[in-house]
Image (cartoon, rainbow, N blue to C red; front, side, top):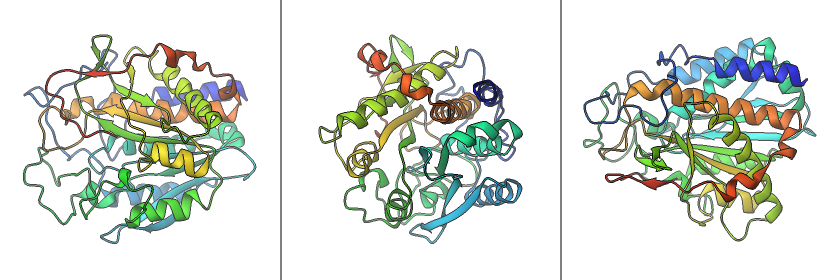
Length: 353
């Protein structure tokens, strides 16, 4: 099994972006230094999959892949179906959930998740699916991703067919709604995923601003485990192991450079609240740069799309493989003791987590 899983990791690491994305391939020197919104790169949504393109892709993969099942878990404020991609062959196996785009202007993680789905449909994925159940919620905040909201987006930077916002249609941050669960998107996630399936691990994939650095070099992303004091220490340790797998597989690439995220302890945030409510190991991964924003220095030029999409694919592939072959149990978490917390260069105005 390990040989096949290693082959699958190699396949994922060499993949290009989705056809519907048509993004550039990652560059060897891409480390955190991709174009900012300063004349070096264009901020546009024209190369990003629309909601309808995503749904079409998922339905096509569902028809092609016998191991995959596509489920609608609810609707957004504006009535868009929220989809769950499922690879479940045995409920007794460990299960990992990948959650993307709680914030609608953070889409490259969704693009990477869709590429990962495509990989799971190849013959190289047979052994990985033998060892782990995989759940994926792509584009939880579809209204924000499509700019179909009940507030103006006139000051947002991106060109293209739409603007994209952090908030849902009611101008609510979904990643501050994991206690009260007021919004339909959050209700769908909790009622029809967290309470329906036995999930062991979750990675919540986001984007941060462009000017965070570690050891004097801009980061390609940052990671963090649950930091609420109410989280079970055993859950926190499993979360740190999940982070170790991510760090070891991304930071070693030559184009990846990760820092420790600066995050709070509020349980309204999924990283904390889900860990406490369901005893699930959770990890936050913040990719560098957003797809759209109203603040200069936060959105990132499209020439960085390729390596950030690949960073997502690498993250999903490595963690699924480590859970499938059991090697996650041996992951060394001591690196967290020396991993520097990222700091911000002047001009950073990003919304957090």
